[in-house]
Image 1 (cartoon, rainbow, N blue to C red):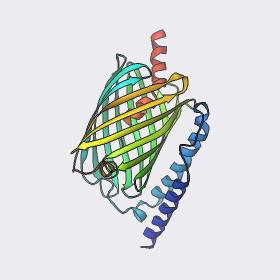
Image 2: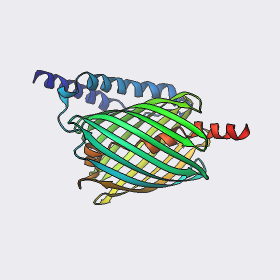
Image 3: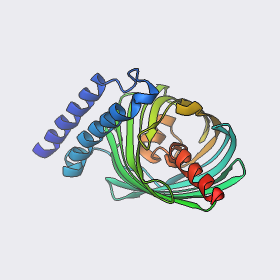
Image 4: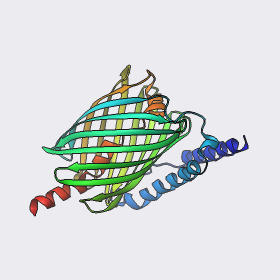
Length: 282
């Protein structure tokens, strides 16, 4: 009982610090990487240490309420090129405090085919936090990329703060990448998201997105971004959730972990595309 109270106090302290910290402070995109990565690292270290040291001490709910999944169709423009993808995910509980998610994605960008597979292991208290690790393998034409990342989410009522950071390697320049997002649910079936990401310490982007669950498990979403060197994207699509019928905010915190596979494709696209062009030149 004492351990549980101690864990709850620790998590309350983290949440209070997160409330005082504005992740969207005005930063010039060409200066975002250093300060931005420090903020990501700080949040991830705070939550990671506490969750890894004593998850059962403050975990109150199940990491995954039941086996569930989703299918997603996405289309639009990425850095001036047409993009279309289809993806599917399956999430399952591993005991009470852990969950496993498998992701697969296939699509094309300006006639360049790409495929992504990922595995995501996480622990979560649906009232407080998520901490997860992800490994992914991506192929763009003849270029292969492996990425490994740590992800943290902190839940505060109708607000979620999410941070992710990791390393990419393979047929590209080895580099770190990270993202930071603020998600707000003005109503239980509507999510509005703003955030930023950086890859290779010099490729900053800012984005805004929205997702609305229409009926049952059917949802629509859209996302727009701008970044350095004229980067921009405008994407939208349809998502269908399989599982118990519940509001969108509950799906995000009790069933699926937020799908980061497409996000990682977008974040690391410039590196992979550069490698493709280099191989074409050779």
